[in-house]
Length: 93
Image (cartoon, rainbow, N blue to C red; front, side):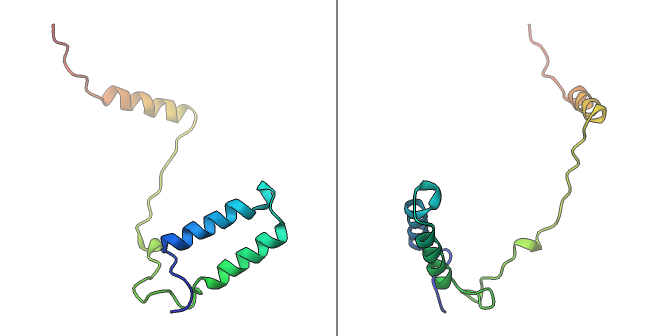
């Protein structure tokens, strides 16, 4: 195994501390920041060889679900229909 483990909390903390200290948006030198990013990227495992054999990117194996966002008058009508279907608890006197 070459490089560091991407799930390593110490490695993540070191990277975040480096970015907080040297990012150009907070007054850091862009050349130093680019060199540091290159150093961190060189330490990561390449995409061709994962860090572990069991570490396979399975994010894309999940089922796909589509959500319909109604707009305009259709959304208003659907909202009123949903409200009408809700059951209210009985009023107790």
